[in-house]
Length: 367
Image 1 (cartoon, rainbow, N blue to C red):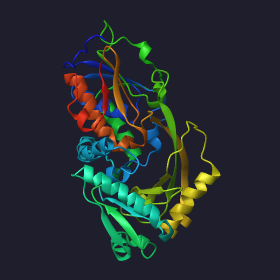
Image 2 (image 1 turned 90 degrees about the horizontal axis):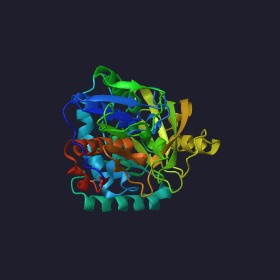
Image 3 (image 1 turned 135 degrees about the vertical axis):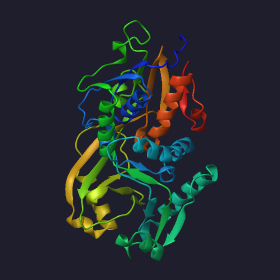
Image 4 (image 1 turned 60 degrees about the vertical axis):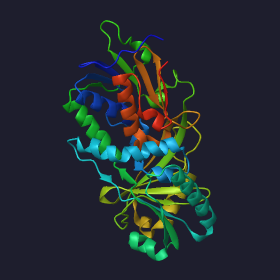
């Protein structure tokens, strides 16, 4: 394959896709003085992207139960980077780093023990993760008074966090406008429409279309996620809370103004149809089991979306032709790892390689 051009001052970059990854790259590149143009198949509200539905939890240790150490390292790296990236935005974005609370009912103590074992294995591999703390009922009540007396035990994972996904997407859209990024909404484009490096063409093309890139990246598949957004004035939670359960473990992510995002494990399907009654009942019943105040909550929406996922459930960056990079496969960890992915891609663009990628066991194919 022809040699890559390194990113020069005032380079022109075209980005396909304005989901989370596309917006982050557009803002970062424009901030560094490059001329950026974005083509997005859908509207500015990002309703067609997985990022619009996500709970946006930043929980590397909690997620280590279902992912590899490299992804955990990406998540840990990304936590302080989120503070920096959000601090550069002119619009406010809710960001919280109060840790994660893990709860379970007595009948599920065996499942909780297995969960704890997985997390302990992760901590033995990644020394800089804050150690998990085992809690008795009194300690659970002190940490999260609103669930007092309901749970005899729990785990606290300090340092983990969350942000408001929709505020972030809106703030990044505003930043693109501020920085002069030219965005074409409702304008689908493919890699074949461009010839980067040629006369009259962009210097670089970045494909961040998620499942929209499946015609070119056949290994991509959709993994369905379902979430409920509730307004629950009677419920106050200080941090994301996860309920361990053998069949439907759920998470509850409290946003501002008593809005809660409640979700569960994924479904191996690229089905984009509305959520089933069974899924909705399981989510709502589990939430009520955590806090009785959810009984009077108002359902704002029940959303579904499919996350772009590669066969190994790990993200990847690959160069497919001269000065064309594809960034994809962030799976269920998009918000948790996207700052790390951003920094890897920027290193590749600026130097032709990434020193960070080996640290994250990240697949970066540049040949």
